[in-house]
Length: 164
Ligand code: ZN
Image 1 (spheres, rainbow, N blue to C red):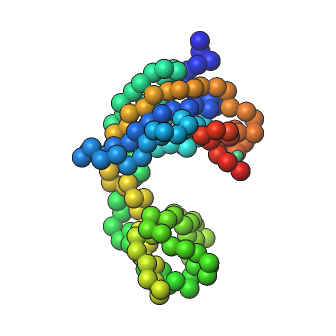
Image 2 (image 1 turned 90 degrees about the vertical axis):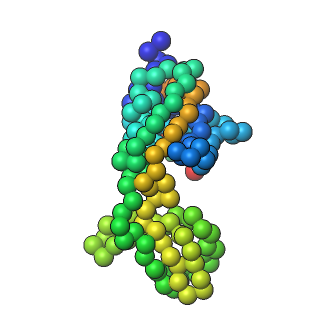
């Protein structure tokens, strides 16, 4: 039976609903294949990964996750205005779009588009769900050993997983 337990190095399929404190659903696997993730690799937020550890196929859990263990706390001065010309010409901007930015020291950080005009793009360096308490309802649908290739990539392949 230990094969069915969620431990590091397992590819785990889950159905989940993510709600905020006000009950608003912000993400869900409903109507899709279960989401597949690689346990122990940081594919999902740390607070949820921790609470799934040791669970088994068929288990249903409600996991409340603090911002620190979720998408982080909101950073002051997270907003920054970037000239449109810093982006490739063919980018079609959509609010919520994610980019990876390189700082002056070569460090990279993700940022999300909150607004844009023909001249400038307003970027928030905070994850859209930063500062939020997260409420997950999760059902564990499948647990299997990850393949060597999946472990090397750090994510699972196949239905519900990473597409190359
Ligand atoms: Zn891969």
